[in-house]
Amino acid sequence: MMLLSESDISGTLIWFVVFFVFIMFYPRLTLSQIIWKIEAGARRLEAMSERANSMVASKIGERSVKKSVDQFTEFFVIEPSALDPYGIVRKLDQVIRQTEHRFEDFVSTVASKKSVKERQQINYGLRAALGVRQLAKIVRHYVETAKKYKNLQIAMIIQMQMPMIEKIAEGEFKGTQAFLHSWAVGDSIGPLIAAELVDKVKPIAEDMVMGQTTIEGRRCFVIRASGPDPHLGRVDEAIEKIMAHHNIERVVTIDAAQKLEGERSGGVAEGVGFAMGGVAQRDVIENALLPKKKPIDSIVVKVGMEEAIIPMKKEVLESTPVAIEAVKRAVRRAKPGSSVLIIGVGNSVGIPNERKHLPKYKEEILRIAAKVEQREAKQQKGGWF
Image 1 (cartoon, one colour):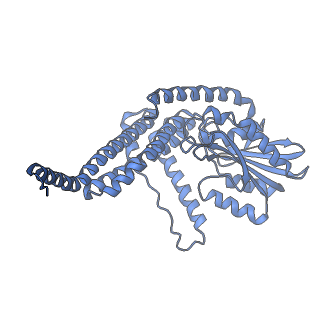
Image 2 (cartoon, helix red, strand yellow; image 1 turned 90 degrees about the vertical axis):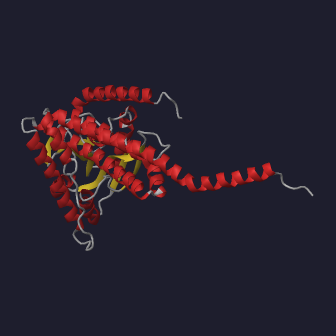
Image 3 (spheres, one colour; image 1 turned 30 degrees about the horizontal axis):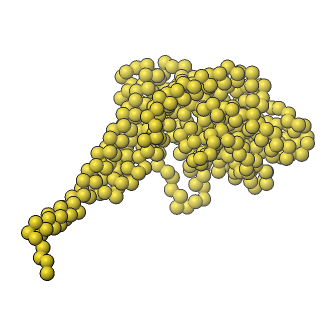
C-alpha cells in the first residue's frame, strides 16, 4: 500500500488554502475591477456633459453664463398623477407647455441680446445638453450606490448597460452641436419630405406652416414645423384648424422611426396609425381623428437609436424619393377629388419650408454627413476589438 508523501500532502494543503482564499477574495477583486471601469465611464459622461454645457454657453457668448447653464441643466419635470386616468392627457399637455415656457424664459434671460433665430438654437441645444447631464447623473448615482454597498449586482448591470448609455449620451452631445448650428438631424426627415411637396407655405399654428399641392387629382394640405430653425410645433392645433374648414378624407403622416439592429438606416416602411413620438400631442390628435373614423396612413424612415438627434446621415437623406412614392400611394387610397392631410412630423432644424430652397440645404446636409463619417472612421480604425 502506497502512502502519500510529505510533499504531496503539502501541495494539497497549499492548493486548498489558495482555493479558499480565491473564493473569499475573488468577488471583491471582480467588484473592484468593475467599479474601476464604470467609474471611468461615469467620468467620461460627466466630461461630455461639461463640454455640452460649455458649447451652449459659448453660443450665448458670455463666460459668466456657464454657471447658469450648469444650474438649469438640473431642471426636472414631475409626471402628473395618473391615479384617476380621466383628464391625464390634458394634464400632460399642460406640463409639457409649461416646460417649454420655462426653457424659453431662461433663454430669453441669459441670451436677451441674441436674435430670435439664435435664441431658438440655444433653446434646443440646451434641451440636448440637459439629456447628457441627466444620463451622467443617473450613471454616477448607480456607481456611487455600488461602491457604498459593495453591491456586485448593481455594478455588473451598469457595466453591461454602459456601451448603450454612452452611445445615447454621445447622440445627445452631437445633437447639442447640431441644434446650436441649425444642422438637420435624423428626425428632420419628416419636415424635409413635406418641404419637397410644396412651393409656398403660410403660418397656420404655433411654429407650424401649411402648404397646398395636388397629387393625382387629390387636394393635399401639407403641414410641418416651421424651419430651418429648430421647432417641433403644435401639430394638434394645426390639424384642428384644417379639420374645422375642410372635409379631410384621409391623413398621411411621415416621421423618422427607430430601426431594429441589423436594419438599414434610411429604409422606408408603410403602416397605419399616427406616426409621432412622445405623448400628449399624439393623444390629443388621436382623440380628435379616430372617433371620426378618418383613415391614418403612416410612413416612416428608419434611423438608429442615436441617429434621430445627430446630424442627418446620407442614407437618411437619400430615402426621400422612396418616401415620396410611398406618400403618393397613400394619397391614391383617397377618392379622386377629395382632400388629404399630409403631416411631416419631426424637428424642422436645418430644413427650409419650401421646395425651392432645398438644394442648398441638401448640399449642407451632405457636407456635414461626410465630415461626421470621416471622424467616425478615424475613431473606429482600431477595429472591432
